[in-house]
Amino acid sequence: MSNIGDRIFSKEFQHYKIRDPFTGKTIPVTTTYFAAMKLPNHVKTFGTHIPFVGEDYAKLTGYINGSLRPIVDADDVDVKEKLYELRLNFFQAVNDVTFVRATQSTSQNKWSDLSEENNMRVLLEMKRKLEDMNASLIYNFAEASDRERFKEQANILFANGYIGTKVRSAEVEFGMSKFEEERSILHCYLAVVFKTLAKRVILEIDVNPRV
Image (cartoon, rainbow, N blue to C red; front, side, top):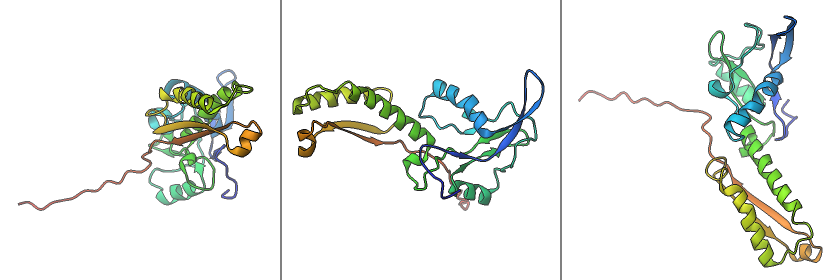
């Protein structure tokens, strides 16, 4: 599994059973069924930037009790660490009947901000916006003053709803090297910094002497 990796997709390995609401039959499904059922509404309700994990956003529902396999207990630190290293997302048990999605790693082998699904969703969203804008610039003049105007227009796209909400910062530049200018190639650059996530919390307690 460690040799299969790309930031465009995530790896899931658990499965469970559901009850068909029409026939009453028991149907085995993988956890990708859960993502297909829940993720679109999550994005619509909370946004692309909110991680699809935890009891508030990604609690397993509609499953037959006792059917989720394999079980990952919240206290299985060694197992969870190995799954994390393999970029395998998993649901973990909160109690006997409650399971939540505990990780949202993409499968890319190098750890970076694009190892987080929510960052990839935001990046692809920003990429599509710029692609749409860039398509409208074909056969426009692209002098230095024009490129400055394109920059202002592009940065307006991300001024509201992105900077400070979905990302820490984002800046677009348009440029042409001598080689590109000779060939009428306009170059669009996006520099983005993602927001910091808290993925682990360390609790430290000091028991101080009485004075």
